[in-house]
Image (tube, rainbow, N blue to C red; front, side, top):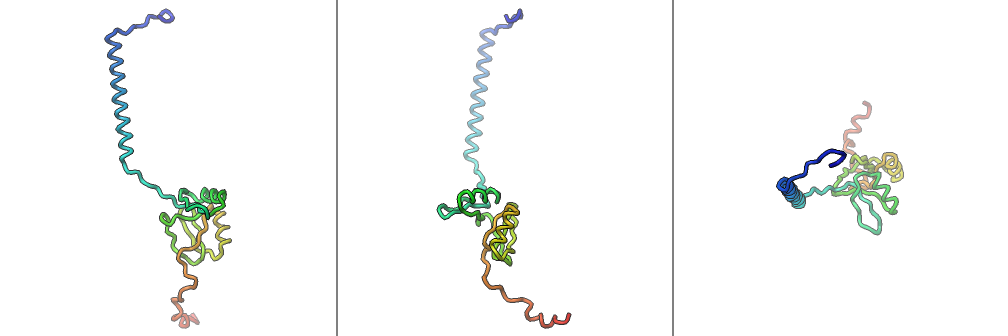
Length: 153
C-alpha cells in the first residue's frame, strides 16, 4: 500500500511468467546482437584512401588526410610537407613546373615558380606540388610550318 492505494501483488505464476519472458527476450536480444556483430566482422569493409599525405625526412608519407588544410597544418607542426597520394590522385601535367591542388581535387599546373604556387595554395587552402612528368624543354611548335603563311592576316 502506497499513499492509501492498494497495489496488486503478482501471483507466483504471473511473476514466474514475466521473469521467464524477460529472460527469453534477453537471450533472444543477445543472440541477435551477437549475430549482427559477427556479420559486421565478416563483411568486407571499404578502404578509404586519403588524397593528402604528410611527409618528413624521418617518416614515410602518412596518407590519412582528406583535406589540404588539415594536411598543411599537421605538416607545419611536424616540420614536413603536405603532398598528394599518387595512388588516389592523378595530376595531369600542364604548362607550369608546379601544380596547385585543392581539397576539391582540382589541379592547376600553371605555376612557373614555387613561391607563387605556395602563396596561392595558402590563399586557397590547397597544396602546391611539383608538376608530374613535365619535360624541361618545351615541345616543338605545332604551328611553325604554317605561321609564315599567316603573316599578314
